[in-house]
Image (cartoon, rainbow, N blue to C red; front, side):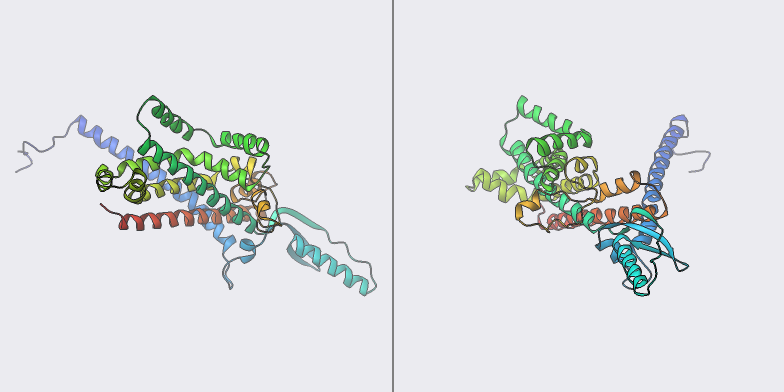
Length: 355
């Protein structure tokens, strides 16, 4: 068909077609802008953070930064050489210099050092505290959330009461995290008397992510064909046996999706753990306690709160910057690792339970 005689069903150029094409390009450009911003932010963290975490010499990983506690950094000149030392190393160095000076029969020279808070040592207590908070809170949230979803979808009869509960759950999903933090502080820290502790942080974070877990778990249960239930009941299984054997296994991939969403929110929250679980500095690790009960009723350090303190509560300089980016880099890696574990488990279950 020649261009001068187009086909009757061929799209004709006109104002509507140009508007459609313009809208298409607006959406496309907006998508690319969002992706570019994401790549810029994460790329900046990865590039600058990797300089703190990795090193050119064996073992190629900054083990001091990953496996020691935060310390103050002391920068000073000694015998014409600029030195940078952490708090413990600086104290030992100063004592050694004073002992050497006394042994030589001279007055010890005063070492003038500039100190920088949280700019030496590492973030090991923060890593441990973050992992404990995420694992503990998600265990509570999944236990309560899946149980609530099973009741709402399998046992509860549709009516105004159930619809009101679902509406309340949706509204709770939009409550700011600072409100959950104040709730946890008033309920668990003060009223229950748990003080600033792992237990208070677990329940506060669990309640914060509970609406997401309940909603996603209920949708996963609804996606399981009703024929599975009817076939199981027809074979003589009880209601609970049907749910446990014929429904839950096929809903687990969707439930794990809710856990992935929950992990991403729980791990990144600062306000709730600041009120209920986090300390600015804690040298002891959570398992360095005298009894099992002390483990649950102690505060911990956490990566998001550490980033907040280092970024906004102390004077900024070149030494704190590397700690900020290094901590953010490790934080992103831990969240990605936990989420990736859930994704792999979800994919494995999807292959195992197919209909």
